[in-house]
Length: 396
Image (cartoon, rainbow, N blue to C red; front, top):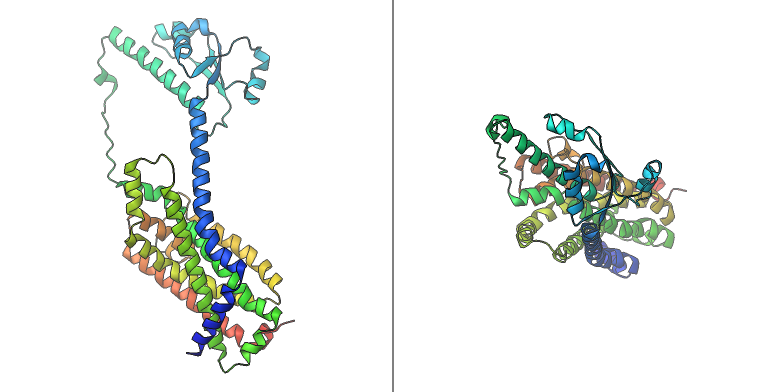
C-alpha cells in the first residue's frame, strides 16, 4: 500500500497549488454555465433583433407586376426603397444599405396570362445569419405563386388532385430525446473531454517535471517505495483530478442549460430526461477510463520533459489533437461503429452522443470500454517503464 502513501502526499501538494485548484473547481463550475448563459443570451438577443428589423427592398419593374408589388408594399416588415441609381445597386447591397433588390421583367404579366413562367431576379447579400430577408421574400413569392396557380386551375377546370399525384405525410418515429440528443449531444462530450484533459494536465506537469525542477523527485526516489508504487500513486492523484474536473464541468453544463432563457417546457422535460441520474452515471463510466488515459499519457510526458516549460510546450499540440478529435465527433455522418469505437477520445464523444440520445448499442459500448481501458493500461505501463529508466528520468 506504499502507492497510497505516495498518493496522499501528492494530494496534499496538489491542493496547495492555487493554479491547479482554479483549473479543477472554479473554471468548470463557473466558466461553463457563464459561457453557456452568455452565448444563449447573445443568440436570443440577435435573433430577436433580426425578427424586429425592417427589410429594405428595392423594386425594379413594379409596373409589370402590380399585384406582387402591392403584396410586398403591404407587408409591415418590408420597407420599399426607391430612387436608387441602377449602377449603384451593387454598392448599396454590399454596404448593407439595402437588403435585397427585386427585378421584374417587362413580359411578366403576358407570361403569367399565357400559363407560362415569369422570371424574377432577387439580388441579396447572403451573409444574414438567420436568412430573414431570403425567407420573407420566399414566403411572399410562394403566396403569390399559389394564387396564380389556383386561378389557372380554376380557369382550366383542373382539380388539385390532377397536378398533385401524391399526398405525402411524413411521420417521424424518433423520440424527442433522440432528436435533441442528436443535436446537442455532439458538443456536450466536447466540454467534459476538454476539461478532463485540462484537469489532468496541470497536476501531471507539476508532479513530474515540476518536481524535477524543485529537486524533490530525488527525495521520493530514495524512499522505500518502489518505482511502480511512485508512478501509481502519482497516476491515481492525476486521474482523480481529471475525473473531478470533468464531473464539475458536467455539473456546470447542467446548471448552464437550466438557465437558458425562453426554453419551451416540453424541451425542458426532454433535457431533464437526458440529464437523469442514470444517464450521468453511464457518462461518468466513460469519463473514468478516458481520465486514466489522459493521466498516464501526461504523466509520461511530464517525466520525459527536462523542465516544466518543456512539458507545457509538448502538451500544447497534444491539447489541439484532443480538441480536433473531439470535434470530429460533432460532425454529421460520423457515428459510433466497430471502427470508431476503437479510437480514443472520438469513441467517448460518439458514445456520449448516443447515450444522451437514449440510443445505446451494447456491443459498441463494450468495445469503447475495452479500448479506453486498454489504452489506459498501456499508458500506465509505458509510464512506469520510463520511470525506471534513469536516462529518460534525468536526461540532459
